[in-house]
Amino acid sequence: MAILLLLLVTLAAHAGAQREGWRRFRVPEGAGAYPPRYPPQDFEDGSFMLCKLQYTSVRYEEMGIGWSTDYPYAGINLMIRLSEMTKTPVTKGENGEPTYWVVRLTDDALFRCPALMGSDVGTMGLSDIEAERLRAYLLKGGFLWVDDFWGTAGWMQWSSEIHKALPEYPIFDITRDHPIRHMLYPVDDVEQVTNINNWMRTRNTSERGADSPHANFRGIADEKGRLMVVMTHNTDFGDSWERESESREFFERFSPKGYALGIDVLLYSLTH
Image 1 (cartoon, rainbow, N blue to C red):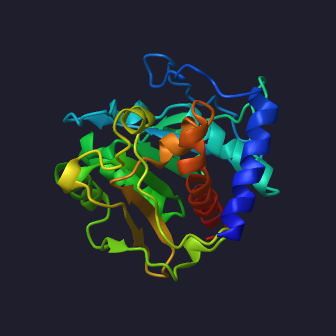
Image 2 (image 1 turned 45 degrees about the vertical axis):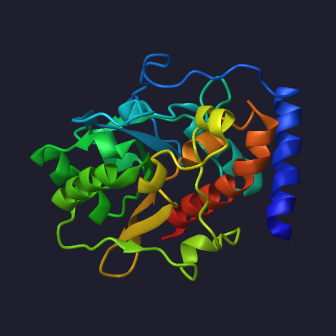
């Protein structure tokens, strides 16, 4: 708890210095507001980068907008905090913000992204070629974190699609003693984070009522035990990063634990 309180103070200090107070408007999100930025041919510079997974949606989930959910500022803010809270160098663009490139599973750039972030994956459909490419990426050392998908229907859709890529690798719950939950910050409980609109309207964290009673933290590991895929189901960690400056109440309630897990996961992806 003391570590999380220190993280809260540090995050709040950075937020105040960078933003001079709390915004009174919602930052737009998604491809409609921010057209996807695909990486150029020479986009690697030796620093860490997180890439956003673009996929085709085959169904609709309430409160989601497909692959571009929480794009781009969830990933940008997470990389900013990673660079502030650790000594990890992150790739930055000309505007000084971390670069958050969008990649498709059929892009050659896929294999040059150290880690992928996927959102609203309860709507995702993979072609045979995409499943084959995702499998190759993960077995060659790639890392995928999927977040912000809810309920039984969303879980069934996602689990059936990832099974196409990794049919022989089981999904399991990531328990408290796993190293990924202790890389820098101890994460005893994986928070259920709701989107900021739902929180401000209802003060309830479950977006599917009884069908999403708590957050699930699950993974898929290779033969050596390295996590290739992590899943935060029935929770929206993306909003804990993306919406950090829009409401002090929301920030204090969700962002410290959101960043604690986010930084732990990225550090794990860098070191395993």
